[in-house]
Image (cartoon, rainbow, N blue to C red):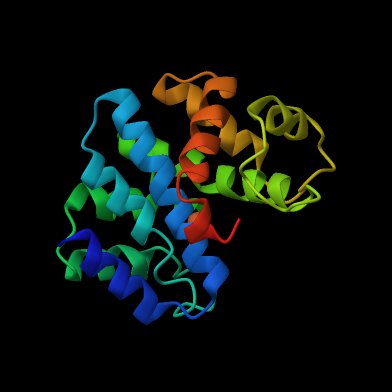
Length: 183
Ligand SMILES: [Fe+2]
């Protein structure tokens, strides 16, 4: 499966533009993580790009969300490693995370929301001028983007990154595709 095919499939299954953007942002962070960790950038990118492909099909029903997603990814020709990461990024299934790829997706997923919200509260609503230290400060403010799971983001330590480095890597990755994200 090429990246183009994966994106076409995402767009065919997801109408909500913000959800597509969330997957593009997750892809960008996963690619940056793969480069940082010396992992397979294409595989990690596809994992991020596809991870919520079933969100509208399952109506966000957490009992089926990510099970269907893993099946769809397999049908598209994704590796078993990608399907596993997608499956276990939803804790509702009780499937334990095993690989670095599993853990990377799990902690990258909520980071997109923190960074997006940090951009949207700026006067220009843009990512360009946003600094990592500002996002780190907002991470510590529990009332800011309160729905963002800080504990989940903090699991970056399990793939060998300190929180500050992870947030900066995620911010730079998202800034690199700011136009695609509308930010
Ligand atoms: Fe997600």
